[in-house]
Image (cartoon, one colour):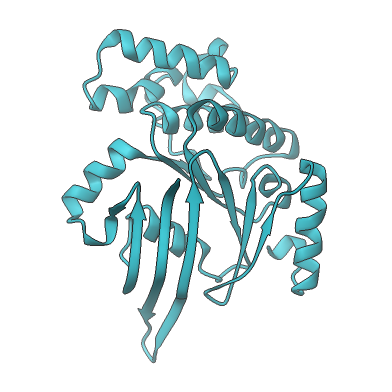
Length: 252
């Protein structure tokens, strides 16, 4: 089942001198329980595409469906409610509330949905075990590491059982060990909850945890790579794809 369907989507922005096409006739899908990475050089349209699919911005042409719902036709108020109920967001800079504890940050989306205390505690306990953050639940956000912050952000994203998780450079502020931990736990959480994950990343290592990689260049999907073997083999396949299209790893 396709959780996300993007059909012939275009997006342009008007500069002082011309109209620039950022995305050109984009088509893609993400299935339930699938992790898909979008890679590409800076300026290729990766974040713009993520913003369109998550309903933060609007496409000029085309259609975007999530769970069969056309978000392209939704009013802003309806989209905001749909995003809160059915979508989870993970950001490069964590976007956690530093005045709250880890526990409070995770529970907040459930409190906004007025879920009862028993459900809140049950979901919190399950996610804290999956993400190995049970020992920091009562700590303040400034007192935990970057890798721990991202795991808290992942817990918050999954806490309301969303259909889709959008991750924008989730390892961009992390060192190599924290990157490995975060991707391991993200994949584990997704196995448990079965959401579709769409991740924008420059990090080949992070992308290797996905089932597919889409390469975006000059506003178009230039290539698609499917995982066929181990994660290590997929990592090598992604690197080979980047070499073949003339990109350098640090630019992708």
